[in-house]
Amino acid sequence: MDYAIARRRMVERHIKGRGITDPRVLEVMEQIPRHLFVEDALRSQAYGDYPLPIGHKQTISQPFMVASMTEALQLKGDEAVLEIGTGSGYQTAVLSQLARKVYSIERIGELGRQSRRILDRLGCINVNIRITDGTVGWEDAGPFDAILVTAGAPDLPMEYLRQLVTGGRLVIPIGDRHVQTLTRFTLKPDGKVSREKLFECRFVPLIGSQGWEDE
Ligand code: SAM
Image (cartoon, rainbow, N blue to C red):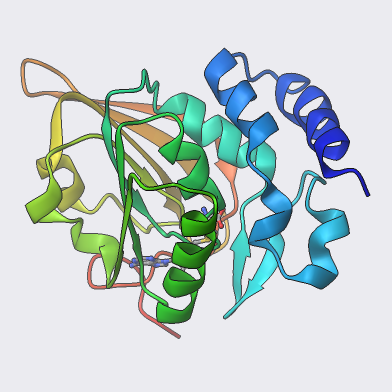
């Protein structure tokens, strides 16, 4: 299988074709080898527009979702970004090419370590990964220009807003355990917070002290 051709087709059909316009996002998604972030048996499916299992009841997000969430962060290239939910590390790799520094938190040790190995192999040296509960953010590394949460939260953990710079964007799925609304919060210069509902989505739950209980 020619992965480069499959990747180009994925970007044309499922990302550009569904309305993503940020040229930097499109370019990076055409470059990052998503097939390296899934197990060997799933590689032939890596450029389909759907999530895939990565073990521990978790998933690598659908490419269109990765593109949409990334575009919603409005990155220009010089930002410090906090990501909650490293998972496979694929979204982390995308962010690493679009921002200055990425701090990513994963609660499942094995996933965090496996991501680290792949990101090292790809030369993503601007990524720090921490294995812990990310619902309280990463205070000593902040404040962040953008925060992306890639698991569904019952509500907005307030600590994220405290770790955002003025003008910073926070993108997070909020809802119940099964269906959420992807929501963007922006911290305004007057200290107010704007809240935009982007679209409906389905993520695995954000589990932790400021999220859902582990079942
Ligand atoms: N963006 C990832 C990718 O493309 O591979 C997918 C992330 S997956 C949908 C959500 C991840 O969030 C899972 O790996 C899960 O273990 C992690 N997660 C859930 N609650 C968390 C928490 N409180 N802190 C850190 N990670 C958490």
